[in-house]
Image: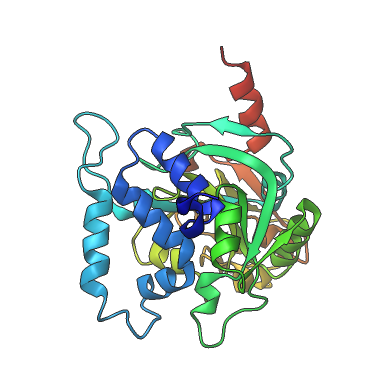
Length: 313
């Protein structure tokens, strides 16, 4: 056993190795990713203002944001990126969220510009996709009276899964693909939204599926307050006016406030609708469906993307 191995966990070494191999991934990015992955709950609690230290550490958080975005542009002549471009989620209907945890081969899709409309952090590169960890949701954990259960964030693939487990043993557990699907299904039944999360500091790629509620989720709060941290699924809700009774059940369950009661049927605010599909499952009349909306971008359909990547020369 070398001296280095006495102080650095194998999962940490694997994370650093992946960082060194990634083009454009700076030492600051690597340290940022390490801090985020090791102290995720503290990081999120401070970032959302839910920690007693949040106000005192506000100058440090501001400095980190400046360092994260400084000098990073998408292409020559492009505007500098914002913090939202470095950490964001892609909304997925239930069926696609299930597929993300059922992948049985490694994935290498380095740039999803058409699917993930952010300047950075838009790759899906999955090593050991069957390595899945249930993590206590940092957003829920920061709340005094959170939605339950807590262990609904799914960290997928390496080096992320082992790293998170090694550094957060009391907040994580290894699960199977089938258990991951069960968690997604249970959260869907609760009316929560599935997001594939991408982060610049996490090697600029997909690393987790979060199951989000508007009462606890920091990303949904930021999005609703004008910071565009979430990308639409590429679908919008569509109401069948002949079936809808305007009962309001869908509006009660919409995490984005995109539905309102009309005189005869429910009205959809397409500017707010993220195409998550929660209203579809909750409508007792089965009067709502999802339809593709080109202006909302391309869906994250992982198997189709994998087939496309495999066909490229």
